[in-house]
Length: 205
Image 1: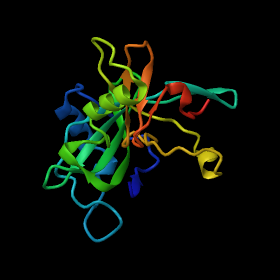
Image 2: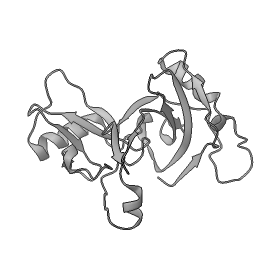
Image 3: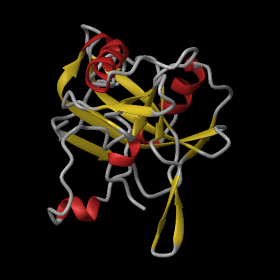
Image 4: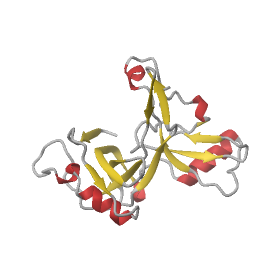
């Protein structure tokens, strides 16, 4: 990913009529982030006319204790922004309130390379399942489905070189597949081809 455009500091919360894709898209289009002037040659994406299907992305862990205080990580809808070939060139991160009744469009993220078929995850779900089977020797849990997650890593530790993570998932717009295994554990399929247990991911708290 090559860049992120953030919305202004105002809490631009927009109520959702429902969680149907059309209502999520309508709410996103009415946000400050989508109403910005996008003509000219500035450092911003020009065309927001082609939008894909919003995808729910959840934090790997719902909360953490930092400095004695509990931090709650929100769920997101991530909205693909497509080119004429229906590949995802950018994505809008739409933060959800706890009740999932409103969104706050917080960022537009630009991918270094377009992701085919309107995807936001670098891996397809079937590839994530195959990696878990090959690397962890675990089949999926019966009746379960993999879900997309982001990783609330310690950004300060990363900036200071104290934390190195190269498997992706650091942004809601670059999520990883979390696969429930038949062994009773969940397995995270990294973009680096490796498979991790949640306990092996250096998340905050």
